[in-house]
Image (cartoon, rainbow, N blue to C red):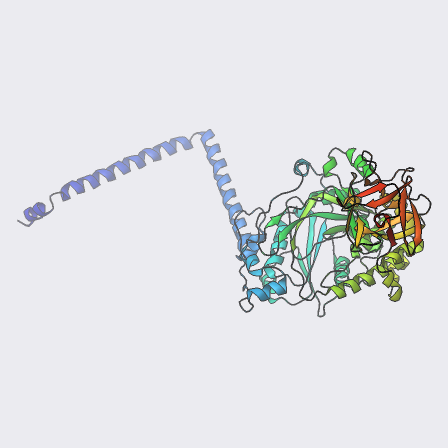
Length: 593
């Protein structure tokens, strides 16, 4: 009865039991057939060899993956170590404190950039490659030179420094990267905690109990560097794709080279990359010996570069470099004395330091170039909270006097014409560098050699009849180059409000009678409209001017029997028959004198 009741309640149980039994029988049959098949195959020698080979490969692959996992875990599992993993496409983020104590306005003033925005960006973010196309296809030779990248840390937040370090490691071939040196000018607990927890074998820090000048810090780091080539990078920067190979090629050809790297810009608030394209420019020092003027690549340099297979990728010889980043061979850098530590600084900048180093590199048998294919993105920082225009002018005047005392020689009157206040100050010269320059071992050249062989388009005569601004006698309007002093093609100067800048500084040579700019461009009549004045390279003849002085530096400027004239219709400069009118009377002297 119980059995009947069970079957009536669960009529399918017997069917299920039979099905399970049948399934077990089928599995047993399959196992038996598989065992028979393997036994038969194992007697086959070819199958045995293949099986053994596959088995060994599986064991090897397992050991390799286990080793990689062990090395990864040995380094720790922090995001920062993952950011250093080369070719890692996964975004890695900064996990700092985000300055919970400081307000957004305070962090912006202190760091001069948006720290909170920086903290939210991946440490290994991708940036656009704005290099010339030829730089991307050119094959660069292999070299054993090694780079020591030096970064002096002043006020940049930890996330900015870590992003710079990550970009250096991820975008530099391992064999060519000797080390990254962080010279810490202040205590940054957040940064130090990250560096302590995530040790990177090529990252080295130098700490100091008391802040040192920027040039002194860089010199100390350079002496401790182990690489053949020193690369000085601002703290607020990111290296771009392919930055190292073009630089290494330049240094492999000549380690006695001071190389200026090309720059893109990163906005200090949005952190967006902005393309900066100065491929066609070089820089010439001005006679204030603290600044430089950019000009187009001269014809002789164009011809030299055209001889190479990739002219647009060929380094550009330049009389000077002005802004960081830059690189130089370590041995050469130390041989010529390093950076001048007597130069003063203001708001973490040293006016004139690379300009002076450029002149010294050329004169001491080195080479100075721009490398168009080696690019770094620099964050355009806000103006420093401690910036003072008066202090900046004071520092610039001091540094220019140091440079003039070392290099000007018998050109000192040109310098004093631009910096008359320098006569009133006393500076302390760097005797160590001065002794190196005048040593018999290096046999460095002087400024005359520099002007005659390097800055050939900036060549000056030994004496001038007049110099300064050319100002209308009755109006506050001066002849301005309008930027054409730095261009290879001719351009028309115009009358503009007087400001005393280099675009309004003119020289009247005694012998040639040329009126020229500091870059050697001449005022001359236009080739087509002969009554209009243009600015162009000087011919040996046909550019003569005569200043007919009426007294008190006021007079007529005559060219080919005609007089310089201002007209009301526009701001152009004309030649017209001479007559007694205020539109043809000019004051030619330094403003303020």
